[in-house]
Image 1 (cartoon, helix red, strand yellow):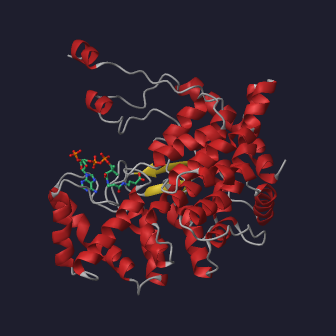
Image 2 (image 1 turned 120 degrees about the vertical axis):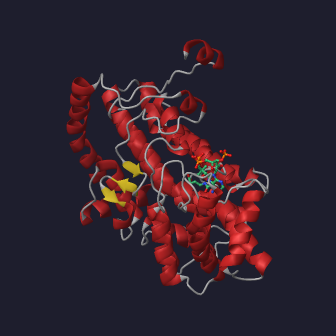
Image 3 (image 1 turned 90 degrees about the vertical axis):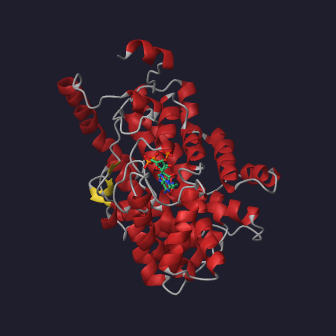
Length: 422
Ligand code: CMX
């Protein structure tokens, strides 16, 4: 067992006891009520599940295991995965140990490339990534051990095994998808000297140290967003049926591929480029304001703005803006993003529909990638996926370790509401 597994195993008795105590003392208390509007409206705001990896507070944004995300921007993604899973940042030795675990496992099976190469040329990069994950399901240690009859107490161990393997190969798979889908030439091999984020940037085809920094930041910022968002909740639900990590993560990432969730970063950059094309460069604030109204009056949303939970500028967006101001200030695309931030919140407030007029993470991330030459924006959700897999896997492992049962909320019919709610 590696040091991550040891640390997790050491924490587990205390977490199991905590859960039992909370359930015993508070199990019959209410944490939420559900209105008819919420039942029709995507269960927004209904508290109905537990997630200990992270918390999203409307007025502060993402908090990972007690750390506001803006306090973690100098960490690398391996440290973040360790933190998500165990609740503690790794020591130097633990970090090295996790990196060597990744190194040992970072070998994509050949059949994955054959399947990807057989896919139609115009397949979406997210469909390619997810196909690769599903086809690797045959590697699942969980499914093998389950078939052999392991006990419930042991479930988390092969889920963690599967998660480490998945996380180790995903940068290579994701970079392979990029190079294949966009005719970038031969795949670039994994470099054992580089960390997880830099390796991914390297395998995409860049050796720019600043792009490595951008990638580490990107992969850190998108790692997790508590339990009820579409990707986390889908992964949680599928995993609750004891489907293994390959099935569960794939389910989550299929949700991330939707334009109202992870795909928004592709849409967002599209909107910014449309602005630049229309105004032949960076528009004035007044021109931007008019264009924002044009978008809204055309019945469309302004991508990158609004959020189901947040009611403040997303701190992940703030981190990207800070990074951009340091590394991309001469870039027109970044300048527009910066200016949109000054204009659009006021427009959305006047428009009066969006409950949150502030930018979310997707409003800033694309411009940074674009600056470093990653210009194929349908690909952006793949980067998001790589990062979010850390959160999905952490939640999955914890749920199996704590014996979270199968998800099964109750639905009612419209008729039932009419007859029973007075
Ligand atoms: N532009 C225009 N209208 C917006 C808007 C925006 N950016 N954000 C919300 N609205 C509208 C909604 O469409 C909704 O209109 P209807 O009543 O006509 O349906 C109304 O305001 C109320 O919506 P809300 O309660 O504020 O927001 P929701 O929780 O329903 O939806 C989200 C949240 C993110 C889907 C929505 O804000 C949106 O579509 N934003 C643009 C897309 C985007 O940036 N998505 C990325 C989110 C980050 C992520 O989860 O990955």
